[in-house]
Image (cartoon, rainbow, N blue to C red; front, side):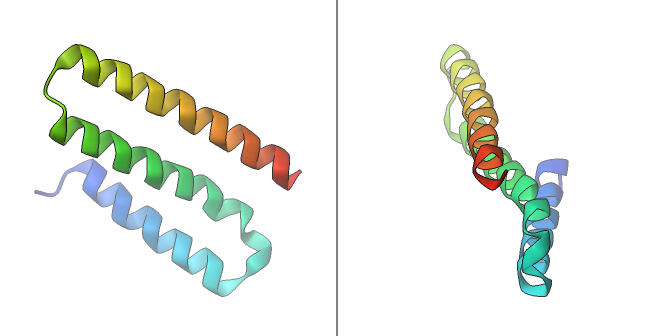
Length: 79
C-alpha cells in the first residue's frame, strides 16, 4: 500500500501547496515538484491500467519526453 510513488505524490503535493501559499516569489521551486507530481501520477496510471508491455513502455517513454518538453517550455516562459 505504501510504496515510494505514493509517498512522493503526497510529499510533492504538500510542497506545492506550501510554496504557493507562503510566498509567490518562490513559485519557481514548486513548478519542479508540480511536473514531478504529474509525471509520477501518469506513470502510476499507466502501470495500473495498461497490461500490454510494449504499449506500456511506449507510453512511459512518451510521458518522459512530454514532461521534459513541458518543463523546458515552462523554464523558457519564466526566464
